[in-house]
Length: 522
Image 1 (cartoon, rainbow, N blue to C red):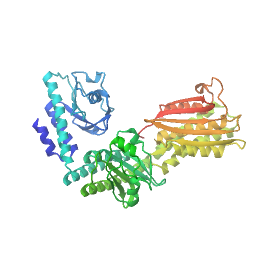
Image 2: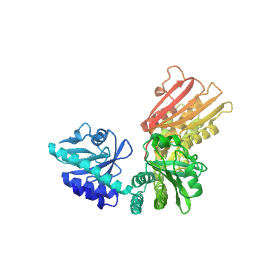
Image 3: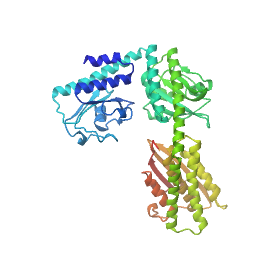
């Protein structure tokens, strides 16, 4: 038992400590040992593993999910002697299904700090004494982590430099922008004992600082609005290109979000600009749970860390752009195949009055795909904003399809949800068909009215509505059985997004609704 406590004094970083703990636990239990620690209030993350080290910081479980998530939620250990993979609470990770697991023990770490997963490829008989020993190991790991973190909280300069080295080293290993940003806030908060850390990146086209990463579990914090360069503390740090310290954000007049600061218990703050070659690209903001000063060595460490992160971010952007260039031929090929499929649908449909009408529909679909590629080159490298797509398509449709005897007003509003290339292309085609349908079929009798495009995102589900105030839908109208090629395309593309489409009459308006889950990767 004393050997585990000695590790806290021997290791220079928490990551090294966890690796050593997992190895020692594996030896003591004669089993593979994986350590999952709490991240936020409802999630645990694999931090060390003797069975699957490649999944460290990648494997995550929500509260109550799987055997580990259940132990995290209840605080009660679980022991499965055999056929663990058939246990009703068992949840397999993608890529780990091939691991032979027969006997499993999951014990809590400390007081809700996480769990330890012990696994054996054979039957494991748990005597009362063995169960007690394994639970005691979990409690001891909690004590060891607490002792190590308390030593850091003493705040010596060497500890801060060690924390800086740990975060910078981890950042340099990742080639992905989103992962770098999330690692930066998670590790900085953990290593420097901050309650909340955030990263805002500069959107030069709008002169705004946009929230891109935070480890704060509160949903309200994750949805904080963009900040104009001329406002708030973060804007000042950018404008003056120097760290800004605030003694108490709950009392600072220039701070935006006092209510949220009170709710989350935030007090002192430091905003550090992220620069590369004298160019500011964003700001790192760190909050404490108590009023305190930031010593000079701590500020210097954060400045160094912000510069390292800026280099990593720019490097990741270059890698993404290079990857996109390499894959562009693949995307173009896929888009051409999609156009070919749509043209085959048109040929089979055969309800066009003229060749010109058929070619015009094909043209609008090609322009919808073209709009995504155009925005991709101007926006966020590998993600496209839906509001930009909608505005571009409305502009195209008004310019090419509006008849001179129609007086229609268009409005695009809602959340600027960013989608990866695949989903953005599908959504562009869906919006194109729905806007086209509203203009061509919604105002055959009515000569004036409105067409609204609305976009919202709630907990990862994206909803878009295209509504028009023109002709009412016929009684008993069913979009699924409609002969309209456009609606058939929308139905098909919605299914391709694993989403759903419906068309209905609401307060005299014709409303087309598509809902789907936003994909977080390409």
